[in-house]
Amino acid sequence: MNRNQLFEQIKRKKSFLCIGLDPVLNKLPKHLLKYNDPILEFNKQLIDATHDLCVAYKPNTAFYESRGVKGWQTLVDTWKHFPKDVFTIADAKRGDIGNTSAMYAEAFFNEESAEMSFDSITVAPYMGKDSVSPFLEYKDKWVILLALTSNTGSQDFQTKQSDNFKLYEQVIKTASTWANSDQLMYVVGATKAEEFQQIRQLAPDNFILVPGVGAQGGSLSAVCNYGLNSQCGLLINAARSIIYASDGLDFAEKAREEALILQQEMAQILTANNLI
Amino acid sequence: MNRNQLFEQIKRKKSFLCIGLDPVLNKLPKHLLKYNDPILEFNKQLIDATHDLCVAYKPNTAFYESRGVKGWQTLVDTWKHFPKDVFTIADAKRGDIGNTSAMYAEAFFNEESAEMSFDSITVAPYMGKDSVSPFLEYKDKWVILLALTSNTGSQDFQTKQSDNFKLYEQVIKTASTWANSDQLMYVVGATKAEEFQQIRQLAPDNFILVPGVGAQGGSLSAVCNYGLNSQCGLLINAARSIIYASDGLDFAEKAREEALILQQEMAQILTANNLI
Image (cartoon, rainbow over all chains, first blue to last red):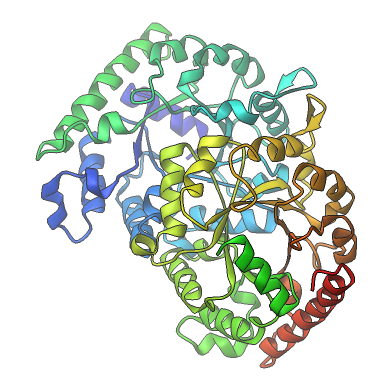
């Protein structure tokens, strides 16, 4: 999916919501356990209930890998259930030397070999340019590069200062020479709203994927104050607050209600900023 | 496997060789293509031919993930074929916020849920302490943290200087407060032999996993000059030079010959340094 298609979707759905599909078996509604693949059924019902309210889905691969081969199968089958118009993010935090990143790109972008082809993948920047470039060779596929994450450990290295810039700022400055905003997004946690102003100076056009709204305590309006750009430029991820809104028979319905609250708030923000 | 067991294995085999199992289907000897899982057969024959000459195997997960569900099955089946006395490394370069890294730890350390349980996993440090800690909760399991990698992109961020230390030095200094050398190793590329002296000052006791000898051009003797410590402290990885030594019927035999050359060189080094 290219940038215009993503923005068109945002305008059509009046939403820049991304739903994180990070399911854990023992948190699932009990009635799903009768299914052959309870997690797949959980994901399918969540997708069916919310896909008109969100513009992206983001399964975190760790939650699938933790269940071994059958978990990987669930990831493939979940990918197959995504509607064609939705932007899909493999939240995999990969990155390795060039020839190895090329294999990761196959794993998540090459449907022929891997039976799935996400629109994008999250990548860790530590190993530099040649760890990122192989993903960019796929047309209309995106790298979503970790910049400033939402966890406490983000303070360990990401904010180290050198040459008058913090490391995450160096990552943004440097990566902007590898690809333009048609293929490159950044991850910036919602818990860092005060940093968005400076980040927008470094990356005015890029989309930013923002985790940390909801369960992790970040504020949607604070992020939008500085984060919005002329094509919206934000994908706000919410996971636990939506997918675990209820653990009963009504889990999908309640998930939709939670998604709707966020979507309506986003519609107001888009309107107020003359984006729709 | 704990540190003493690893050192005992090194002394017994007179080797600190790690073999990287990074197979690509179209580089395999043609006669293997008749097997149901050619890559598994390739790995099995390589393991059978070399396990008395090396102390560790390191499958890079990207090469398995690229083939989707069947690739993940190959990884599981390869793990099942490892001899019990060998140190196993999931070269996965993972790392995410705490609750997600806990899922990655399950994926690679918890045999009950994932059907495999490696001794160690490579982890990217960018997200800091809580992205690493969940792996350390498993007894006798190891984190092998990326410090200074062997690729050209290592110069993009890893060598940025702040507070008088380069980023990779900060990583080593900071991570040494998270775990001791019984559970924490570092990755340092063999192409960076001149940096080993300084790294050994920061991490005198830790094992260091060293990729880049062989195909990537690093020198074994240069690395050993500064890298050895009182328990050897080095695991030298070679992959392509061994696993692709021949693409004929004799591929396993030729792989053994290549491994033997390295093992014999290592035996001399261990003897010269009074480690055996």
